[in-house]
Length: 240
View 1: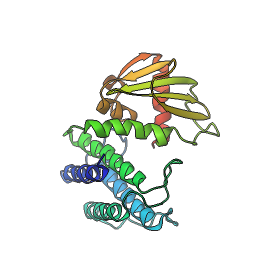
View 2: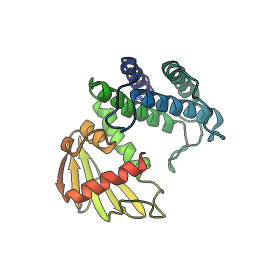
View 3: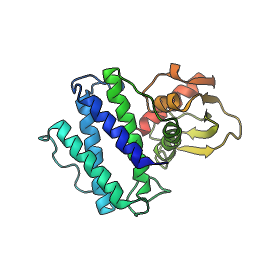
């Protein structure tokens, strides 16, 4: 998948919509305006530029960005991110939060989805939603399940949703089976074994639901609805 092209396209659409009004409220991020979203993404982009440059987390972080004008800062950050990704290529060793991937390829993918999710935020704020590339949405289901949710983040049982159940997600011919309890979330490819609840449908609605950008009416489910809701709560903890 050409993740750099998605970073370029999604980040361009984000700021195109943002220019129509920074004061609009963002329904998926209560208390935030479009301005908050754009500044958040700009800071994420600048952070990843530093990560790619250093191969490690920048420390101290963050600098004081408060005096920067929102749209100009975003434009500069976007340009710098694209240049940093192009310079790094996909095989540079660097810091990531994926225990299975410490290459710069991780950031191509992560920044594509960061840009997409927040593009949706500003579009929802202005009620001008455009389609999501189905292949990118399908990949995004995989990415949010691992490493965002299914990683070594739960060993201390630090969750308000200590579900003890198996959930299955199926979209566009792919399936993921997720076993979750208070101290672990294990994600496996495929549809082996029984599941307490199954979520299925087209990739884009499932992607938006996983990221909290649509309600339960956007997906199709069978099985225990309380497990579905608890699973969504667990995802929200991992993706805040």
